[in-house]
Every structure is written in structure tokens, then in C-alpha cells.
Length: 102
Image (cartoon, rainbow, N blue to C red; front, side):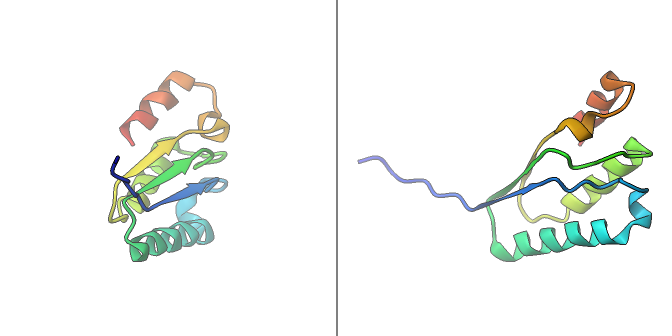
């Protein structure tokens, strides 16, 4: 008989941070902080974040830093998938490189 493996995880999507400079948009940041706190209270094994984590970002490096800062508050590992809004901009190669650092 095969053993059953159970995992507890959360799926977060479409955070859309960066519509205006994130640090000056406390509502979006507070929503992500609340989601991180909720995930931590649940004692999850991991969190999956899929697509559109950022949107119309003014300073990609800064906003990715803020995203990482927020997600590093998780008590479990997290895994990211980028969406079309995450890759908007002229220099796609540079965006890919910055996302790899997160």
C-alpha cells in the first residue's frame, strides 16, 4: 500500500503591486502583509504565487525588492510564477534577470 503524502499550501495570485509606487500605496502592501500573516497562522508547507504579482511598475528592481521583503515574512518556502503583467516593459531580458533573483 502506497503512503499518502499530504501537503498544506496556499495559492495567491494577481497581487498587482506597483500600479503606483508600492511604498506609497499602503493598501496593496497591507493586503499582502495580511495574506502572509494568514498563511503563517495556518502552518502551511509552502505557498505558490502565480502571475501578475506586479503591475505597471515604475521601478522594477525596487518593487521586486519590496515583494521579496514581504514574502520573506512567510514561515514556509514560496514558489513564484510570473504572468504577463510581470513582464511588461521594453527590456524583457533585463526583467527576466531581475525575476531570477527573487
